Length: 248
Image 1 (tube, rainbow, N blue to C red):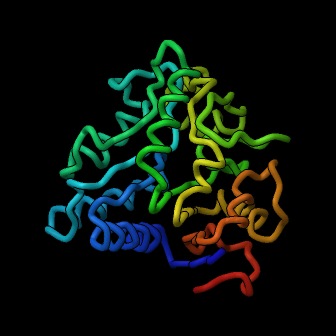
Image 2 (image 1 turned 180 degrees about the vertical axis):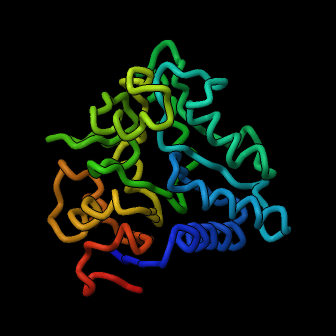
């Protein structure tokens, strides 16, 4: 596991975007795993800038999103499909048929998970998987538990996660209680994984993830078992890590 510490959020976003642009320019038909939330927003803005400057072409790229809330349709501003369209897809030349996001409104959520798994098997593995990390150590919506699920599945969101995400809603009662998420096995199949972390609120979990052992109660710690993982953390998120563990 490589840990790259950068000065601030903008540098984190720029470095992540550069990895993706370089990947696509090497392999036009790259498969990307994408995340939502505030952490990757800067990266998406930078990717749009690269596209508008003619430095990257998304026309052959396929994307898979990590997760989606159950019960929010695509017109809901808090749905992840709305987020991705508004913050990336509507501004680049990616083809709609190459974009995959779980359907949170599917009548049969289990069947939707199976459908998503089939697409991952057919079109994967993912070349670069982008991850954020929850304050409780979740990746995607794989929450701390004595057992972790390998494939795409329905999950109950913890109160910690719902509280953290309530900043995007009117109040916590509006935050969905369940979601569809790619499983730990789906994430670990990626050729390269980039975990982004920004802000002092992420410092404790980043320290715990890096300096403790592998535990299902810190799902992100599973990444230590992957062959090619890079954490890109700004100075605030990396502030509690022992310097010997960091690459400045």
